[in-house]
Length: 255
Image 1: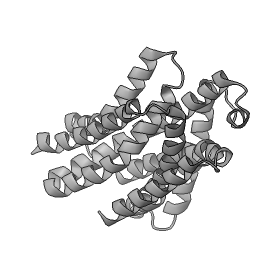
Image 2: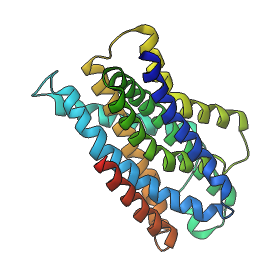
Image 3: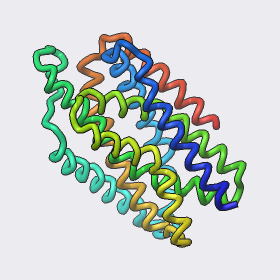
Image 4: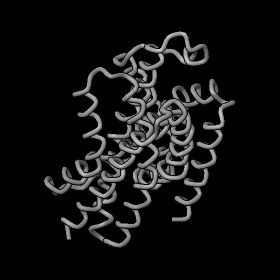
């Protein structure tokens, strides 16, 4: 039964892999970037408010029914500013270059920057999600399968968005392959660590890690994706991304 539960986490990675290769079938990369940016924004907001925040509340409440919300807020802020610190180690960028089209290299660095920090935060998120899928699959394989499929649905657009942004620059090919490989196998890695150690993740540690992930995703959504969306709000690809993202979120809510 344990190996079947592990296989569920590989299913999640396969959908990320499909998402990574989707952009290769589109000739007009700029338009696809705008579409995936607004789509990823909606999906991330859905993940935060409809998935992670309720899970954090449920996870931390047994630890302390009085202080669990302030505790979550502290680590959400920690995750937000942690990603800001990580921001210092990726290429310099600005949100105004694309409006004037006066510096293509700077624009490409900006897209690479978004892809990189998104990937870093999602690797952490996926490891925790992999643990949840694995534990659920051990108790009820059918329920674990449904959970894996619902997670896989939002991995498709996120994988596409990260892939197309990382490919904005032709440099650091080995590094990009490493990041994408970690992204694809991150869910399996989280479950495999739990499988090999045979240890349970405490509610406190899980709640803290989930809170940090929320802070990271909010940072990406508000300070990275949203300015890019505002700068290109008149493009039909942005509106289409919002529409498809909203429909996808509604489907995920019903699962």
